[in-house]
Amino acid sequence: MSASLLVDATSRVRLVGPILQPEHMTLFRREYVMMPHHDRRNFVEKVDYVSGVGYPGGIEGRRKLGLDWGGPCMVVTPKCLFDFDREAGRMKVRSIHRGVSRRELQDATGFDLGDLSSVPETEAPTAEELHILRRDVDARGVLMPTL
Image (cartoon, rainbow, N blue to C red; front, side, top):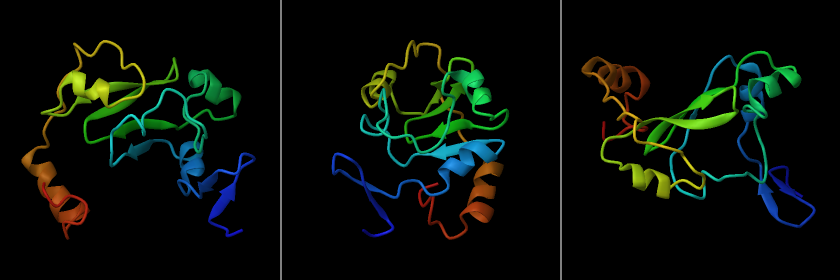
């Protein structure tokens, strides 16, 4: 078997997965997750395989694992920004991107997002932030060709 493949007991192939995600979720003080797609297949109620520790049982669950620091703080998708209710151990919608309806967001998500009526629209980047992104972060336009 190749080093990049694992075969589980049911003979399903699992690819190597997110490299270094376990370390990031346990060692870093803050972790931002970037998701290139937002659909029901990516955002499910219950996962089959955990590759990085979030907040299992909330912040207290992290403490029981010996993780008194860090963890994910935000998930960025093409439809919204998520942050975390660390006490409850659940991801929640922080803001919804312009042009995305609340119904569209819920329909593209495989778990209940709760009441979205008071969730604000994601703030547009300032001119200075766009300048920094274009000049320093992605000078060649590889990551953000349309910004």
